[in-house]
Length: 340
Ligand SMILES: [Zn+2]
Image 1 (cartoon, helix red, strand yellow):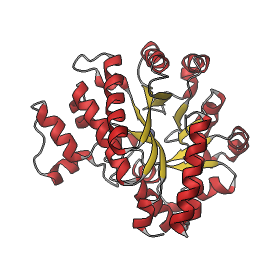
Image 2: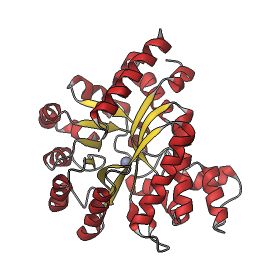
Image 3: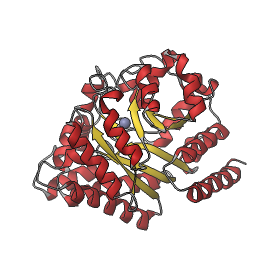
Image 4: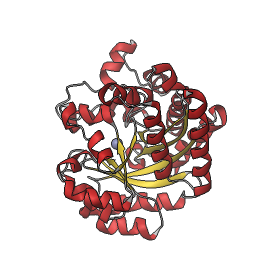
C-alpha cells in the first residue's frame, strides 16, 4: 500500500480521545490565550506531550495528559480542541469519527458538566461545517471516581443523546476497577438505551473483556488481553462485538511487547470483528494513516483489507442504520474508484 493513497482513501475512526489528540501548535495557542506558558519550541513541547516508545506501563503513558488537561478548563479551549481534531480528521479523509472525553476532567476552573459537553459539541459541529467530517461524542466515566459521579456522566449522556452524544465509555485504571464494579451504573446505561463501548483488556485480563460484553458493551476498546483466553472468542463472535484496536498505543503502554504477541491476525482468524484507531493522535504521535501503514508493514494488509476494516467500523458505529448505509456505500464506491 502507498501512504499517499492510504491517506486519501475514506476512513472511519471510533476510538479517539480528545485530550490526547490536540496538535502541539493548537495547544500552544490555547495556552497563550489563558496566559499559561508552555515551552516555546515545538520540539520541547512535543517531549512533554508525546509518550516515549519505551513507557514503563499505562500509567506512565497517562502522565502525558496532565499538561494538556491543565489547558482544557475553559469552554473556548474545549471548543478549539474539538475543532482542531476534526481538522486533523479531514486532512486524512476520515468520513466519520467518534470523539471521546471524560467531562469530569475539565471542571478544575468551575465549568459545569453541561458547559463542558456543550463546548465540545460546538467544536465538533464547527468542524463538521467547515470540513464536512461527520462526528459524534462519547462520554467517558473515569473508573477511579465515585460511582455517583460516574452516574452523573451517564445522565449527561442521556440528556445529550439527541444532540451529538452517541454513547458511553469507562476509561482509566482497569486493573483496580474491573467491569463488575460498575454493574449498577452499566444497568442504568442499558435502561437509558445509551450505546456502550468499554475499555477492557488494555492492561487487565481477558475475563474483563468477556465481563464487559456480559454487562452490555457492544464494542471493546483495545481488547488485547483476550488473546490469552480463547475460550471467550465464541462469545465475541456470537455477539458480533467490535474490538477497537489501537496498534501504536498498545505497544507504548506495554499491553504487548513483541509483534508476535499482537493479536490482529489471531482475532481475524477467529472471526472476531476489529476496526483500527489512533487512541491518542498526539500522545502516541500517530494518525489513522500511520496505523494502517503499520498493519501493512506488519501483516501485509491490502487496500481491500483496509476497506473491510473500515466497513467493520461503520457496522459498529453508534449511528442510525440509514446513516451507516450511506457510509457503507461511500466506502464501497470510493475504494472501487481509487484502488482500481
Ligand atoms: Zn482509549
